[in-house]
Length: 338
Image (cartoon, rainbow, N blue to C red; front, side):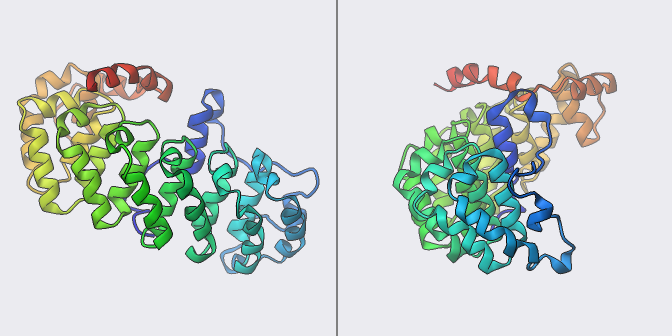
């Protein structure tokens, strides 16, 4: 995988839970039993590592799955079932399962459930077998990149097939759109961050140029801060050092970033940049007294092993805002950026 281990954007299941919101966010994703064919009957119980290459029961389940596709994967139970089948099936069986989705990738990518099937296919199948996904998504690339479900499919393609011509074309079309809007979008930011992590050098450069012209404001943005952190972590050392210098050029910038929940990831990334980490740490140490008065600042000090008010830090961890609370602050962040 190109950047799968390096960049940590939400998993497809996490994205789906966040999009649905509510109490379901805390519920584990389990495979419901299909009324027509249970996991045991289909041979989809999790096998040992030695048996994973080809589960005999898949052969029994395959006709039932293929006959119900593609509509089967547009339901929650069906999508979970197909994802498990793609994970455990032998390559030939997996190709048979995914084949009915040809011509339906665009619709599946924007489905609350079927997009998980596309991501599972990219994760478990050879690039050539799933190249049709990138090819079909290119017809509406910019819209897919900012869709709460489609963005995860694009990120998976970048992770596992960034150098495939069809993925390159898809990403290039996305990057010809409004990159500033992409970086500031709730879902689009994950695509921009994945480009920085796994994209081609020319694609990474395009995203870097988009944020470099006013990186301090992007670093303060509710969503674009994710892209700034990725740029610091995944660009060449000299480019990351230059970006870090631009962020820290304004007096008190590091301390202000450390005092907000969604900006702290930029500070954490600064502390990973060679040449910039020492300067950022110096600013944090000097402002220790001020940061101790802020719950997020105290939490960051505790993470770094610096002197902090332990009571404030503990309270900060216990009162860490939920996604819904952070989302309510998004309009203020967008207003600040505009």
